[in-house]
Length: 114
Picture 1 (tube, one colour):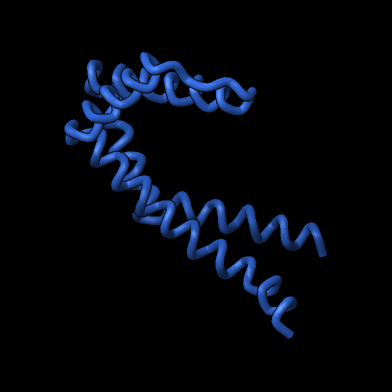
Picture 2: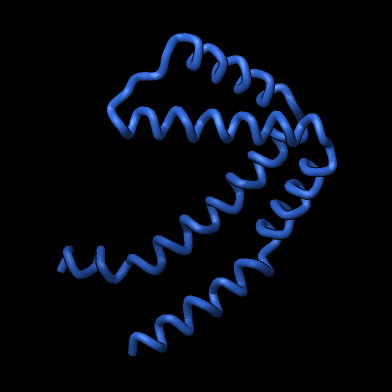
């Protein structure tokens, strides 16, 4: 039974790769990587964000300078069309994945409501 579920999950994964939302995200990411400065900003923000999250997870508070830098970078990102397009495509794919998750977890919801 478990093997059947895993096989179905693998098949679903392949279907997600064929979904228009996934393809659009792939194109948006390719476009992002093609613009060196924009990609550098994107990576720098990701690294800063990850560092801040790790710091908070270990019980440390970010400094005012770190928060200011993050806000400044977020503002630059939100005014960059290539990055906002990528974020829109991520949101679209995430909506699809949320819909799939609701279908997959519905038996658990039903179990607790019987």
